[in-house]
Length: 219
Ligand code: GRF
Image (cartoon, rainbow, N blue to C red; front, side, top):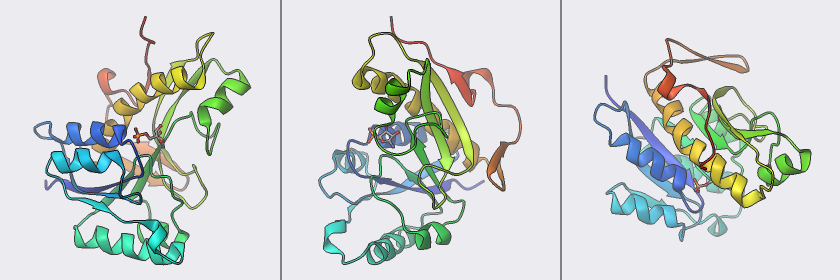
């Protein structure tokens, strides 16, 4: 089967992008990243993509009059690159409903909470303020409502006494780097079925790559 051609949208650091790029190098991995696009031309993640020989495009949103005009350009850049599927990885701009419609069920995002809890910005601060004992991350299909859509994979990590947003974010990020490549693999293998607001995974997800896993904190 031909590899799924993936475009990754970023805005900054790009550690999830790096996890995806690295995993795509694994022999036999069913997806390849054919374009990385950032709405911030100075995003560090673009440099990493370039260094790996992946086309990296800075598309400055400030140069556009409207979100629609920007998303039209984005759509065109993705189309020209032959992208079939989009991963948002720290992409800090809201997508227009028009773009989401054009790519219906072909965009996924990673959010640093166990959705539907703690949508939006500052998810770790929200989790700490709520006093939850488990935090985590979620990969989901993108729908027009922010941080909503069928859930493909989640990982939980403990919240420890004394955690602050930074220490919790670091623990969650480690889990993000595991489940995002896993979710992409399941999609590229055509094992994710979307039925209404839910995603179902066909076949057995083995222990090592379990869709829901508890990752122990470093001691
Ligand atoms: C991650 O925490 C991700 O869950 C959120 O934005 C952050 C991006 O980090 N959507 P990075 O740019 O992938 O390092």
